[in-house]
Image (cartoon, rainbow, N blue to C red; front, side):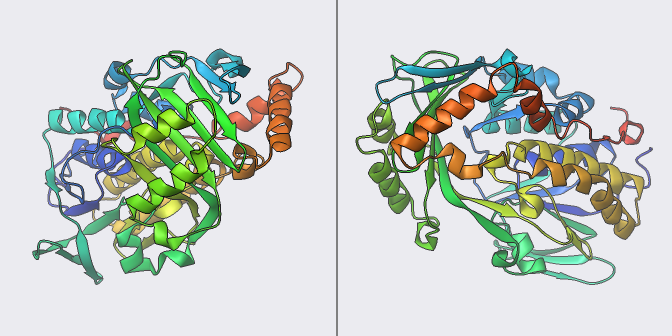
Length: 411
């Protein structure tokens, strides 16, 4: 596809995460230079480890991202479960499930993956990127969308893409209150960067279940001196926790008190973390991802929560399909958005599915339940059960990924 018919298309992307940056990159390569607004003042570092597998790995290959990804790829060799004294209970090497298990062959932090996309955007010529900015109002008609920004300015666009996450303001302004589409999955998750404890085995994602429906873990970081702490808590929803970091950290302190293994070390490191993250585990289901000339991408439209293990895949593949359809149907946004939904829905339906047991399986409440869960985990790693596990772990790999390579403008 040549770029002469699409350069005048005005597209606004709300959200500078993986989905937003990936769709901006693919649009730019198709000759469409979008505007991106990101509420944060700068790219957000750190974040939990994300993986590439199956169709998402194929998209990364097609987008030419693999050299950058390899630069940041973590040396993570599998998962290990330990008891309160740090004794190993179960070890699951990456190769046990052919690189498709809880730890995939390709893992990197969310912040590093986002940097790969930002570097690719800069190399492709860049876009109008506005940090510290967000949408405060959206009004649309048949020919375009009028957007008002927090800074007070207003601008008209042909299309607005909401890639602004689980708590999407774009979704709220255009589609309605979050409560209409969000399902609370029973708990919260927190992660942050901390110094690597000396007695934790390098290169392994180590997990420990605490009595009281709480799970903690430490994942390798690109820098061996640091690790990514992960805390998962099963509890009733508490709206007061939203954006109250003090309350969030107090809940974590209460749950980790006396928890054994590295619980105290994680708690002590938490208050000093510069990338502390805490949010509810929720699923977003919507009857449609577009309304007029506004469309949702990634967690904003079809969040599966970290429990699904496919959040990055949905954002990346969604961005690839959305940009491809916009470029293929230049001048006809209605058709482009209809095709985006038609093509992507089958993948999202499978990717949003949770593993058996959901959050309860990850956060058993009693010592007996913890031991029972460990027994089940050991059973699932047996040769007899491996085919069953592989079927669950590869449920999205049969997706027929469309090819939009012909629409890329030669650089």
